[in-house]
Image (cartoon, rainbow, N blue to C red; front, side):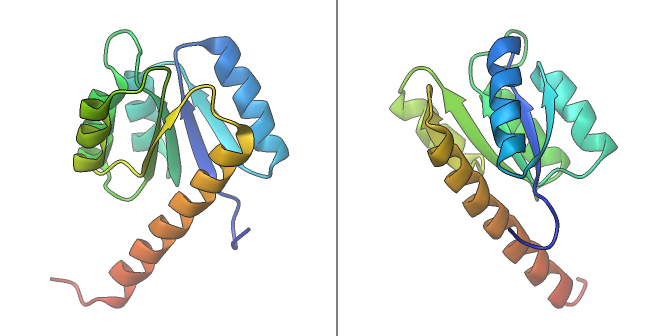
Length: 137
């Protein structure tokens, strides 16, 4: 793992899923925070830095695609991985268009999720490095 532990925000309205996945990710060395809605995720992102957001598509109120658009508008740096229980090509295209890192089907094996979080973290850190090295516009 890179210099600091990856800060992962896990957003899912299913408390049991969130809790179980949070425990598994913590065991893999990630600093995990959990929220139950897109609105809560936006508040959390405004309060502190997040490296990777793992976001469920189907949530009451603001769905994952709406939350992705608002997260990227608020802070374009965190990478966002979308989890869904239903494969949908149109949703996948929209997620990529909005800047999502990956679109994974639930139930997602923990190793696949970890690999995607690590890849998303590398991409985020590379973008941060470019931002730091380029002159301010």
